[in-house]
Image 1 (cartoon, rainbow, N blue to C red):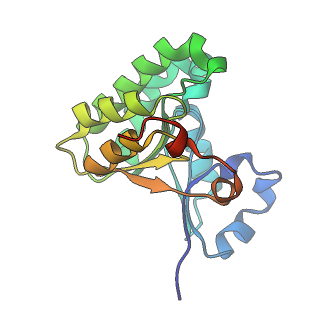
Image 2 (image 1 turned 135 degrees about the vertical axis):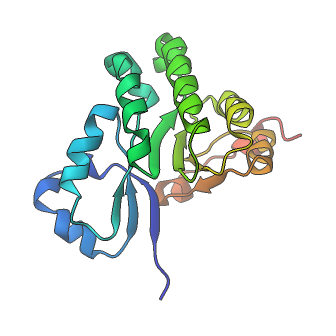
Length: 190
């Protein structure tokens, strides 16, 4: 039997998840539930503690850095307690440009903390910032044994090749398959 693996799911945001934890776990899908800020890691650990198929990731979503910008210390204090990290990264979309400098500082801080660890599975956000996410990842993580998964990757073909070259993995979801997008044909493909 083939096991399904979901490397990036925000289970804590599912409607009425507190009453459906056992039901979710019994689906048999190996799931990494990512968190949006370090302060949500422990409550998620408590929520999914008895699950056999669900693992909780310590995250710091780039879209929420303004709201939780003081949580980097919490992240650093918890990193040794989990194998799973996510969702982290950068978001260069127009609506998040005002927080990009904060995002960069937090992302660099997280990468520095990850460089001191081994064996982490990390799911990463790179919306409209793939080049910088990959460049910084390459500089800071080249010699670690951490595994990096780019979530919903929409970079150029050049960026895709660079990510593959440094050992990144990619998560694909059902919505990506149905969205009509020809980014690789429309952008630089060298």
